Length: 354
Image 1 (cartoon, rainbow, N blue to C red):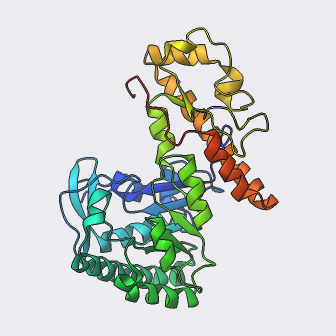
Image 2: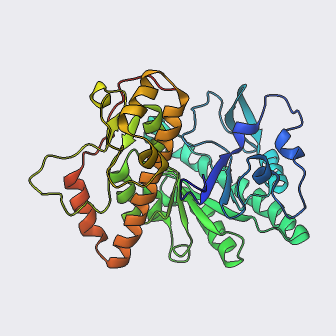
Image 3: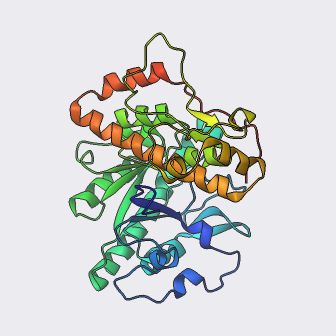
């Protein structure tokens, strides 16, 4: 990862490490000093990469169970169960990530659009109770062990008046330096951020479906992203090929370009060019389209590995371009040109995932 990508942070979902029964977990048994992170040691993550711990994966699987004032419904490797909030807090204390995300009572998918006021009120009340428990426990831990875990507070994807007590509590915690950042599940939550919270970094667990949506959310104020569409594209056999800002050779009268190439297509059987001209990733400098297409045809896992390296390299270049564009003051114009140059939807793969 260090040699072939510019990834500087990892999001880890606790539900990926839990079992149905309360058995001792391997991640809790990793030998390390009191100032080190057992979770970082367990996943062999380098020390200069940001380690973020959250309760659920991105994108979360819908669970048939419901949340309560003391537990969160999750999906583990062996089935559905409820994660006690106290257990999540203990996990944060033991695993010592750089950032721990407060649990949020969030409804996912289309059901979010059908929420009634009573359900929204419960979302605010539960999330507030969970945040209070997390802050109280981890504040004591930080004072005792001098750990540097930063707590990031969730902003719910509901109206501000439905979570007013939560927002007020977060503001008070910011004044006391107990909260280091915000987590949003929908860009509508940005409207609920008060002036005192605006300086905090914002992590978007908003599941953008493509680069245009990322650009839209950056314009609205999201700072950090989890991008499931990168792995989804790799699984589908799609090599991403978009550039930001759009290269100068693009002409406005051209048809919109695809965001990626379908490496299952027989079109690339004899193509000796790299996945993307000018890309300096390992896949593009050491191999060509024909070889990678052969790997997919043979269902060799190496094909997906090389494609994931490439897709992350394209994302690295994408965000480098965004930072440069913002620094130059041309971000809005560059976004307009990008919208005209590329299709909004990532191509659908014609093969079967790994």
